[in-house]
Length: 165
Image (cartoon, rainbow, N blue to C red; front, side, top):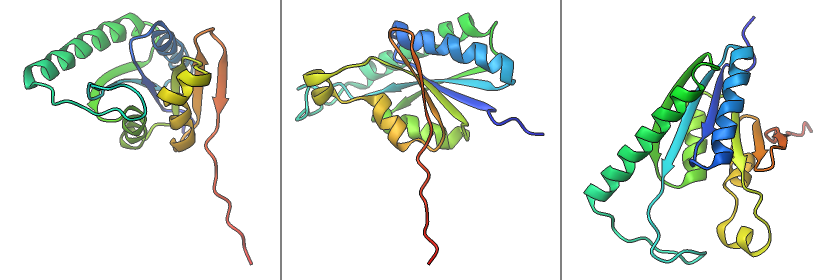
């Protein structure tokens, strides 16, 4: 019998909350014999933050430095959770965060996303949006959202129903 959860994606933004999500995923993976895939997304550097933000060209050197820094940090995190996990891989992607996470879910054939949410509300949520919310709305697998306060919320993907006439 094949396990229901074989591959777990964990988006990492290097906050304490996302590192907590990685540790949680590692412990769960041990029980499920699942692999854990830590994903960090390099986003373009905005010149003007907010809903009307625009992006400046980044030098290839600066982008490479951000990439190498992210690789080092991801590898260190992977090492720290590897003793609890069945198998851990890391990847740095580029693009819009929520869309890159969704693409990683498809590319890896993930069965579960475990991610942190910062619980923004009000104006902060309106201006910055919620990556977790966007992933929950678009992911093709269940999403386990872990809040900064340590609360865990599970969101199952919406299943489109078809009517038979």
